[in-house]
Length: 452
Image 1 (spheres, rainbow, N blue to C red):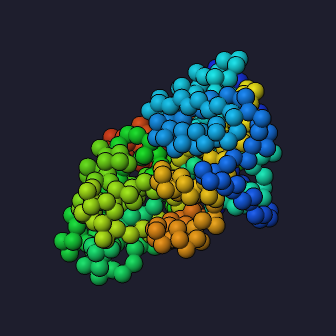
Image 2 (image 1 turned 180 degrees about the horizontal axis):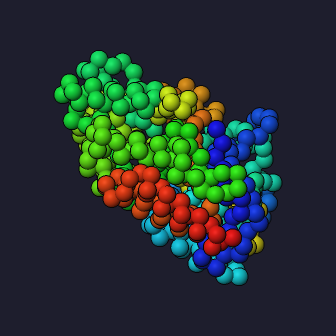
Image 3 (image 1 turned 90 degrees about the horizontal axis):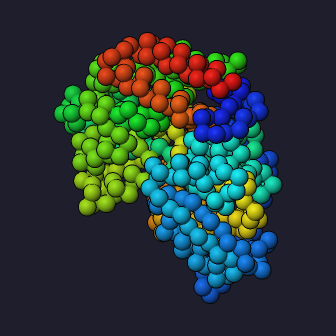
């Protein structure tokens, strides 16, 4: 099932240069044709030695901008890189919600303030269209891409060129195995129809007051859940001419399902409309609901006795598909990646540093151990030592074949604001799902026309 993105992509309102027309498949995984083994990491007594193929002589100063979440581990790699290569790495970090604007202000001028930037998946199109970041096709080869799990490459490209080496996350179905067993279930639901039936059964038996708690606050988490449901219910974002059609078919069915889960079947906590995708974790961790959609990072909270009452009972399953639509599963992808500033005069050295940090299986083991960042290489999900330490990876890996991206738009910020508002109006009873999506599509088509 294909999803169509705009035929014409245009910059958002931050001094962006116009982009060439394009057709983007938002589900594209950017796969290569053949597999090739990666060069082994060069190890020394002190740890990793970077493959400084272009910058071994030293004397280069690299500046990296990332959110504060990534700063500690990037600094750790930077210290070793500096010692091994003689190059200097300066790291500028700030809270995630300040990162976008800090990068834009640093790259919008004639000279690049940064050489490497952490790019959220929803910024890829914007930054690429504006000429802020350089395409990496000659560095991230098809053979190298083939080594990566499909979900890691969703929304990393623009105009058929890849622009970032991924760090990624995605949503999973968390479930409480003990609650399911009490109600007589041995497996999680395969379809959203079964999800509803199982939730109602547990409610009727007094196992749980509600089946789940959504992230339905007027925030980005709402968009993430809606996007995966649109895919599951067979929806299309746009038609062949680039007109937005979420007010038809699966786009409306997905929103109707969300509304019904609160006011119809009433399987979801009514508090859902006030919860974001961090706050709704607390209901699952407290053992109040048997099902929850949430990100990779939630597993750590759910298996920590200090923050969870369901440590022994938490499991991960494939997010359901829809029996009516004939789909198997769908999950929204997220996370950032590392891109190279298009105006950087140190692009070769920047790639050397990225290679040392991420383009080696052993480096990814370190990200996992030190930063709880899941790997992107397929081979690491087949590693017995990793699976023994992280048994959840076996189920997580299955979900990675069903990754779906949010629309790849240089004006994604405007799109998501409209969608958040109209979805929330439907969820809180202000509009019917059909009216909300009709109004949303009118606004989105108008915005698209403005940038055409």
